[in-house]
Length: 65
Image (tube, rainbow, N blue to C red; front, side, top):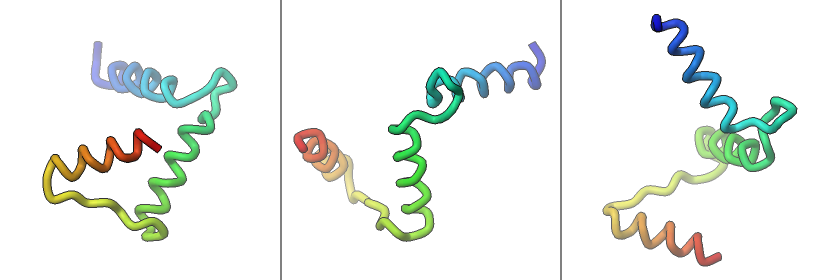
């Protein structure tokens, strides 16, 4: 398998994970994409953590909500 074909294979697998049967992004993916854009342009402040314990606490707190 050459590089071009391998790239197409991986791209197709990746894209299929985020799309519904009508070949458009599902609601959860659209929300994640919007949030990522908002973080990138500064509308939403990016979170940062000093250590893994802070990260895990934040993740677990979000899971309880």
